[in-house]
Length: 269
Image (cartoon, rainbow, N blue to C red; front, side):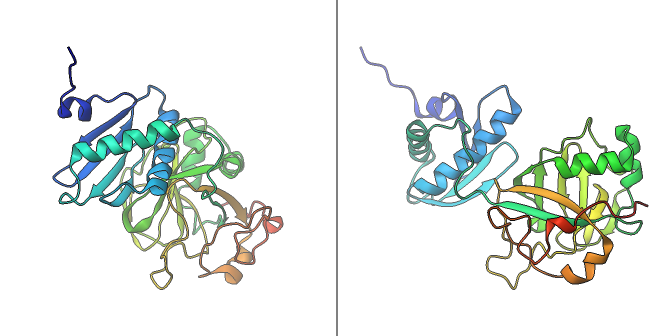
């Protein structure tokens, strides 16, 4: 006698991949694994697979830290049909993190450190039990991964190699300047436009990271890699307002005319 798994059971208890209905026209996908780093890496791999396969009916794919929201045309496909298609695609491609994707870009972002641009630098260093110089060195040596695009297309990045977690501000700021580089936990984010934030500000980039006059408005996407390089404040006027672009392969530049060889710690506050 052959038994068939009910569609709802397939949808909620699949092997390795969890696919839950999210309203009438979306699926929330999560990779099942006890290792958080694996879940995040496999989630990025899943996004690449879906962008390549483009299952019928899919309208948009929104990345979260450890999840993907897949929006679809509910008149073209059902939750169960789409979940099955995605599982077949995963079975054929696998989700094990491997070599960097061909579509994965690297951004080397200049950051200026000063009393004005780095109001929380000293507090972050003390919280971690480091000197400001040592904390910045660890920050610069970290290769971060953009996990998702937060409010106003802000790149939220994971992988900061700090020896501990950074707390958020006790009192959030009502206005943080665009370009501000901020940290919380072991994550980093860049403020695209003026606005409030409770993350701690340790520097500022002179580059424009989101510009609605550009198409697309940002040059980065989830899964891309980021490294920060502290540069002297004298570089600011030359780079201010230039649009952030990916670093050409083999170059120590972010494509704006800044050369990484000019980097180095500026005078700390």
